[in-house]
Length: 186
Image (cartoon, rainbow, N blue to C red):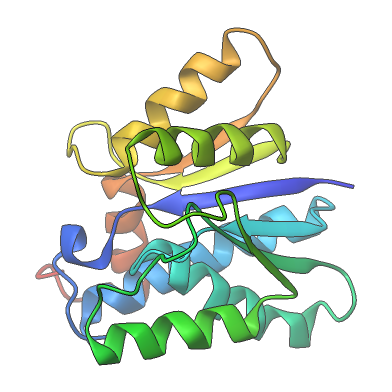
């Protein structure tokens, strides 16, 4: 059994506010390719959170990949605390519910509402200790929320073998060029 933690930027950190934005297609394509590589290498669990952006897109793409890879893998969505997403607007709460409905398994690390940043650290430790590898959509030259996960992975790797892959902005640029080789504007 191989379990992969997938995380990365929030949609707003990528400047994507509409799923029809051409940048979204680039990210989807790069993420789908990386997920397919994981599945072809024997990954049996795609595990992520439910943040808007890479995490929710991961669940959406993985759910679609179940057609191509039937009964080969499961989707897990882990939330850091019990009331995750309740402060979001109605449209984003609906996206959260759609994400959870696509998962084969979902749970919260903490059964309590948000009380402190320690719950987020506990979430990271849970994800690291319940997965064998990670995939981050993250660029070390463009800081954002994934920096915390990236640093947690580096610290975890000081004591454990824990491979991870990064899809950075250069990778996304290559994907954009492959999707639209005649357009230099993406």
